[in-house]
Image (cartoon, rainbow, N blue to C red; front, top):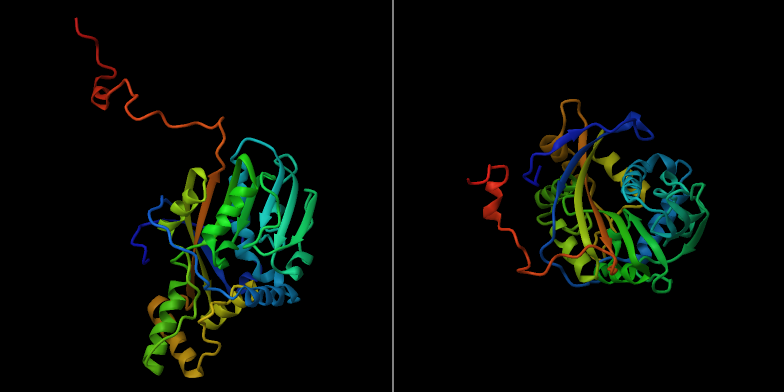
Length: 337
């Protein structure tokens, strides 16, 4: 793994839809906090992303491509359950087919607003026990008043936003004081096998390469972005999921079915046949498994941030401690006589 970290391999219970052509496993959990942020840029064509998601939602067999969104949505829901409170009003940003809400119940979320940039995805939303209002809205421009929601959630949507710092500030604004934001997005190590294979193939066959996989946010940036947006009591952690496919063609087909094709402005619309064949061979040679399958790695960044409130725990003032770390070694020792 390019992350250079030894991670524990966990088998996911059950199989995703269409499991006959793919298998998957979770590589779980290291914790990281942030360092440097980055400014807003116009990287992605949002209209192209809307069309991609509309096309994916129109597929008759589209449910077989929902395995990754369903699994990550359930893990976001798990983090909601970890908070011992009921949320009267919640917002799911980029929720599409209700991949988070289907794992929640009314004991934790009483009412929900579901937004997405794709109207067709909203029409395909799954029925849940939570009363839900759906709103066609771009994640970059939330149409809600300040201090409206007790909980804001997002799963696998924020990585397509041009102005991520601005979007996080909007999320902070629509939250009530002591409200919480729980989100998941793909990180910088996502699809590194596909990226490397295409770059090597294009360099070999065409004398240079173009970006075919969209840029993603690094985990080292995420905590700082949350802090700059005004969130406190931050938690950022990582899962990595590997999905095994027969070959590179199946990887790209599933990405299209998920609505996750590249929509960067500088993307190249077509790949030469020779380049694709070379990339497929490189993929199998560099990353192929003994059973002939190839892995595709998705790095999932989970984040939790709270809007400040006077009731929240606060750090003590600097210099107010009345116990020294040097005294810790004396704990448990008998007093001097």
